[in-house]
Length: 221
Image 1 (cartoon, helix red, strand yellow):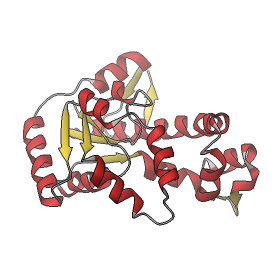
Image 2: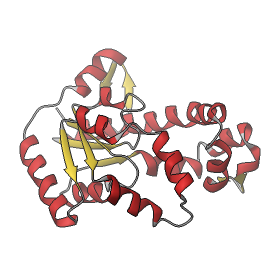
Image 3: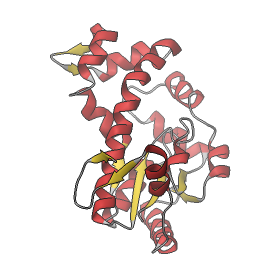
Image 4: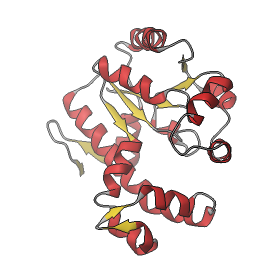
């Protein structure tokens, strides 16, 4: 049974770089952020247009405009999440169904706000990407358009790194460069080799779904 590893980390910790190492090692990854970006160009766009007409242009969500609209308004943010989160979960379920059919031994769910949204319940184990606060701040402030105020606002919406590290089963520290991070990932892969997963079994029991042998669909029993 596929072992599902959750991958998370606060802004500027190096999660994307760590995800690229897993891909390099041939591990299938479901990227929640990338899925959202696809939805903003497709299925979610008309739904967001109904709620926030000013942020959709030519059928595509203007992410910068949407971010400005919801960043400081919790009610609007919740309304956006109510639209997007179910669509992302549906894409995630399809991803897992495909891997179940293909009998993949390991899959990674790359979810930035994994702990904040209770996503650890959908994982057999969680890996947190981390580094020092000084390196984190330096990385984030180098991003185009980033300010200290925006950085602090992002941090306020995320669980503190210390708490994420406390809850994690595995950690990757990216503070010593890519080669060090890759060595840590490969060590984790060795640790997880042939380890059976339990999440998909729980999903089948809870949702009453069956995963067909060579199908990318989840069908009702």
